[in-house]
Image (tube, rainbow, N blue to C red; front, side, top):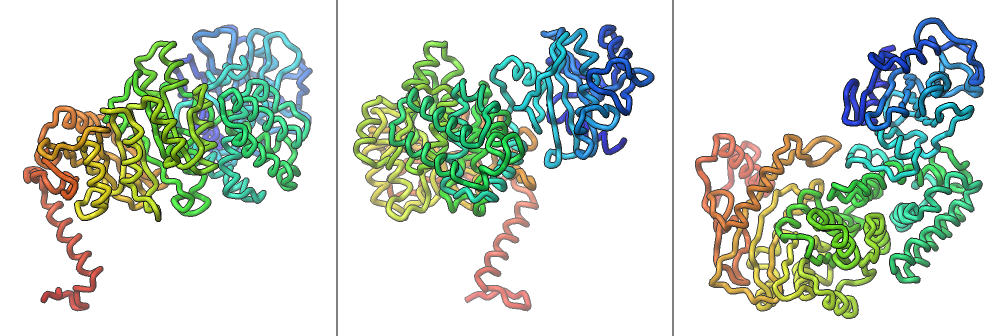
Length: 627
């Protein structure tokens, strides 16, 4: 029984609810339904689950009152309930004949449902297993008074929030709050499965994005689970991709490229050999993306790039942290901070010339929507967001990201951002905000040249906010590009960011704020922020997280200092600078000695000693070499 309690706890955790009152209604355990006489009478009529009883048999009942794990009610729909039955072992998930309600989760929950459906529309959920990795789940819908139930195929081995089961049976779009754990588990599962069937690294992102694009086609979304063969599913995916992308003004050669990837996968005999509906089959991938990842992308109040985070986790398992594949995801709180620095609002027109999966555009779109009416929202989707991406896989992810958010025109250009035609096209759009995290350590182009090009496409007085390596802010580096930048554009602010903000990669970065087409005046002070503590801490398997909820207060402080141009010892400074000067707060701010502790002093000594050891300047007896 103790093991079964793990399953019960897992179920509540995945449903994101708790016993008792919840925002949607009540979760009532073990058949305890005080005040709901109708449910109580039906459970008493059902009695305890017998060892054997066919679904059509209402006469063979156990003694006492039925005690399902949970009965879930809804405040806004008193005619619909959810009944949940759990088993600790997934070997006890379902019998072959569904006639052993006492021993199996599916048999048991359907036994309860056949009585409850006499007065209610019943969603029946059977869960077995004690962890997400070994869990089995099946859901059914038994309408009031009907003789037969409906299998909710799309919810197989997935536990939804209670309201989402209701949306699912209504055929509505479901939404889920952002969950890094769920993203990570889904990404690992999918990556391992695709590796087993030998899908290439180049095809993986297009496979993921292509399915998400296809799911935007209503006919495909409603019909894919009823298709009879692997070949027909793959062909329908290709047709749906074409329908969606044509409506979004994507060039025909890009559509053909994406469809070609699915034609190649269609010939994969290992993939084709997995029966539809089974784990790791093509329909399993579609269901996982439709029920787990896409609802997070649809979450209206979120600025999070759930697809970008999913893909970042996905490719981690292809090689280290993914940087070898050119993927360095900008941390979500950094994209939001940069959008705040840019002052984005509903009238902004935003571009990212190295857009990757579209993180900056997703965050910007959400902020632009906040004070916009319905007509303005449509205009933002049509003409407010622009991106450029060179990589085929990332380009497909970006257009999927924007299309799923109903960006009808999907102004994402495939190609080199330095291409003259793309540059002229962007210049014609009157774009006034630029946001980028350019590729680092390129052989032929330095990071500041991406910044220079971004500012070139903005309108006069436009704002560019960029995150670049600290080396770009050091006076001895990239002198020619720095000089060109300041001849045409004005450096308004630079923020030194936490050393490990891109953990687990070791890149140290700063954020620069530029005004486009306004030559820098070295007699006017630039604002410098020392933003080394963002409140985030490292946690095993989670990376850097805002564990103590400090980030919002820190963000507001940084923005207040910047907007008021306040100088605070240890946090900020103002200084007149030219192209040969340091562009970092560390060079100009005063130390706040009142904040120093004995621990700071000891840490400095430890760091210095470690430096000497690393450089071979400490002898084996511990003495220090000095000239």
